[in-house]
Image (cartoon, rainbow, N blue to C red; front, side, top):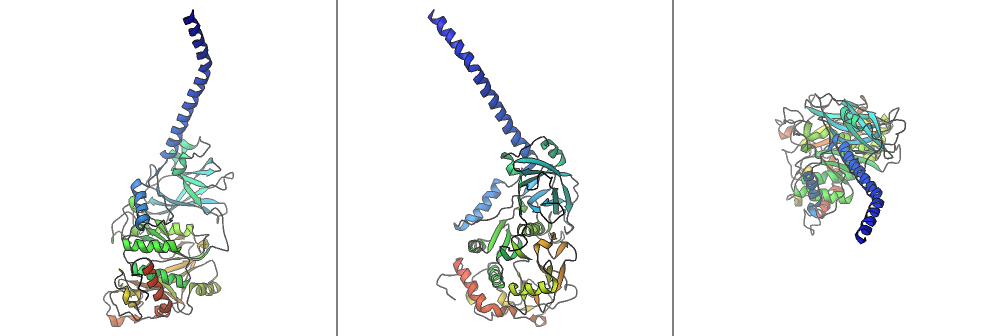
Length: 472
């Protein structure tokens, strides 16, 4: 009797537990299915290609001096099933209808169709994408591309975007919500607000592709001169540099002048060291310089009144005034605010050196070029007169920048007379057969020396490259 009673009670409890067990089982299966679907759906279309080794390498660069340096990151992504790389995404306010502009790198011979997945308040929207290749690929297989994503009427404030091939996008069409797991397959959409005045900066300089860089002294001199000219921020797309150069980068980053953006394109493509395949084999022009410049233009479009695009061995010096803060209002009055200004290139060859005319002998143990020793430039000749110039632009007037000038809109740029301002380019000679007596003296830099020389010494000392007790 006792056994039968216990058996009866057991079966009774089992019947009571069965609905609860069934419910738990169903919920577990649903969670498992959701987790699998979320992971599969959002990762099948886009692969997040910032490898652990890449991330750790960037972190090592930052921590090389034990400093906590904040840096922006560009998380390059590959569109699955294509050769297309995604760099960054921005809201484009200047069209009749708002769109998302994705800066990309594409293989010129590839023909693919794309769709955009847009996240608006956690809801997923699908938009047909268009890709346009920029013409300035310099005969390389890969070049910069613009992917445009129209915004549906019920998704005018998309915060994230993913770009997929059409075949992958079709698989996503049935999903209504953005998944938290899928965030790593999406780019953040920057420039959510259009700003037309009261910008945080007056001048930002975009410097592309710092690669194996060791020219420490000239870098410091350039940074100090840019500050004297009125520059608020210098944006550097960095791949690699020497240990001493990293010390200097850390110094200027902490100071707030420099923003370092790790540039990892070389992990995806064989980047060329030349501007033509003839000068350096590879997949893309000069370390991916042009997509970096495009990213910088849009990144600072609403953060700076003006953007200058030039290299670290170049300086745009006014001739009748002392700073860009005085120069640009003069140019605005003559040509208008929505403009681009081109400055004539003058090469100061580093193979001809003079004793420094001002005290700078204590810099001799610092690696790099001392621009104060190279105050003679090559004569301007017809073959190079209108080449290798650099620009200062109103970024909100420009759609597509390039290495020298602007592709779109065409005709935006104006040449500035060399008597008003010109580009000082201290580098290897462009006319190597010239004898020193054929070079033309230009001492404009010396007018800044009273402030410039002490500033350079201070920066080197505070970076740890000069002794602390060296007060010169």
